[in-house]
Image (tube, rainbow, N blue to C red; front, side, top):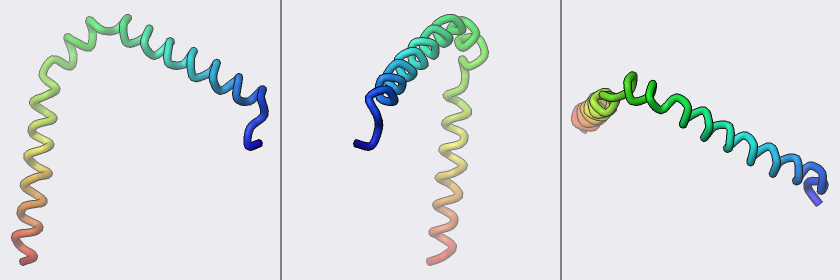
Length: 63
């Protein structure tokens, strides 16, 4: 067997507690997320456009 029974139990407990704490932390900071990241989609669109333009120019220039 690759892992012992104790290691599997530890991994399951660790993963459960870690996920629970991450959810609790996110829920606690949700007001801050709405304030600081309200226009993050604009940045994502900008990055997508820049990468697409770079790819287009790269393929166009190497024809």
